[in-house]
Image 1 (cartoon, helix red, strand yellow):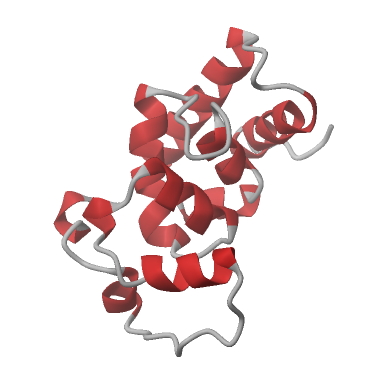
Image 2: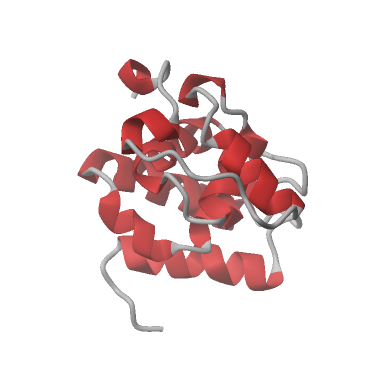
Length: 140
């Protein structure tokens, strides 16, 4: 992953988006982040982009590096918001190498087993659902 840190999503995807017609915070931020070097992304940048499923193939491995160290890594919303953002799109796990899937599963299990009160309700359900997906069991 470090080999790509000096590149932007625009460079990696060979796709420069036109200026947005919409001026919402999310749209504007996502357009700006596509021009930012991946190595300069912070947790909040990753959370925003992964929540929108943008640049997943390049950003998800970087997010997993962070989640390995701290499953409750926090952007601007709440403790664990990066893990929740990743969990909202379990289909993206299929893009990961086996080792990254294993690391993501460990981060999810660690978060669930911690019984931390910041991970509850629908967020907890999302993480548990991702664990099932990573285990290859999509049944409830």
